Image (cartoon, rainbow, N blue to C red):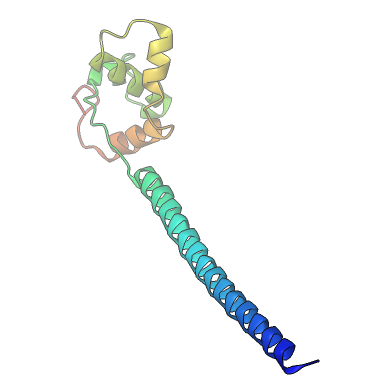
Length: 135
């Protein structure tokens, strides 16, 4: 190999090396950029999920006025025979007299908790009012 071809091949190798190093640097930057983008998207998704799930931890209370006549229809002083859930539902539907259809009433009653009857029973047992008063 003569000196001229050796210098030429060295120049070609240096150009290739420079080009390869430049491509490696670009590849490295794209890798870092893709990781940062993935972290940003993950953070956005987690924030969105948490933001949408927070209202599930809130609890809303509806204050109903229960007429004592509903509680004591049979003039029975024994409160253990009462159908508390039925009383709650009737009092709740009395607030919305425009709702006449059964399907609409069912949808409306889904707002109430399944434990609403037990809560009323506990309130009545702790109450010092007679069953003829409003609770």
